Length: 445
Image (cartoon, rainbow, N blue to C red):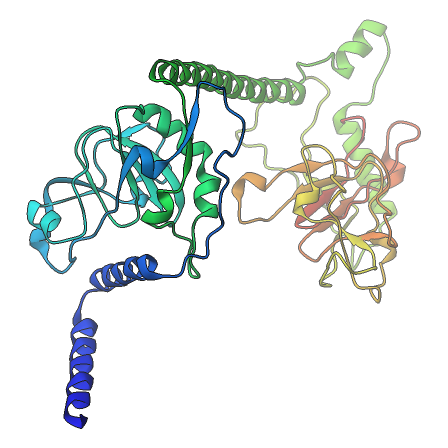
């Protein structure tokens, strides 16, 4: 007895050593094969489905897939045997159907040889067999346009004459939830061949199946065309918006102040005069840190010519304050000041439906509140498409739980109130997550 036990232990040790020497791909194949065997013997813990899930016309009937099709599994040849791969037998895996949009499929990324087919669990399926992925994930569907084999990630249906492959193809997309309900497993869900046979299917007459398929494809074609039209409209709107903005910043959208003044026979303040007044006021009222420094003029090399009366200026020349925000950790459940984040900055406005808050102990600095007229610009993000996105708060952002603040990766820049050329113009103060907060003349000068 002891000798028999020792032989068993030695056999297991030898198997483990042999397994350790195998390539990773072959180890995975063995794991999949063992999982397939386990699924076949595992106690069925899946849900039960009604025989007639919904009402159908009187001349239709309900059936189970096992009654109207032969269900065939798949397999993977040993991956450490090169002679099993690279042949003429198309071999499909669920990965080949990931993102696949066509109804039929002729081959996958790899082929296997006849020897690989004969020395594995793979079976050669005829043309018009309906392939249905049974795990990782459940529910990919395609029709074989020629004889193919699959790996063990499929339960495929070879249909009887009373069913059209195209009808079953569309129905199985609708029946994915049924398949998931019949699946079991701990690491990942998988539907066994036995449970795939339990899938209910409504069966109309053949002529009606053809009519249903034709109508589905007609409606889908209309939907595809509508989607394409919407994409074209969206692209055209984007181009139109860009054209409007381009015309605006080039002085071509509306009459310029110079044109208006000339037509009305009056004088006006040019951009250069306004900029000079801003700098004089800032210089006289400087209360920033350290000695006042004149802002560097903008580099206008290669910049386009401006309309009459306009002037180029740097942001530094227009700003009177710049600061970073809080590094406090924010959360939904906190009750301190609200802190704006990148998701809150939409195109031209703020979305305040998803706010996080600083801890209650956080004291909001007096300069940190967002006011009407602030401009928020996203300055840093992992996605380049978000950088430069702007928002203009239409009201003060003193939202509580108490008041609003901004984190350390955002910046606040503002213009002194006394330099505005029009009455009732407010200075701009801005704070926002991952944003540069800019203050501009609300009249566009």
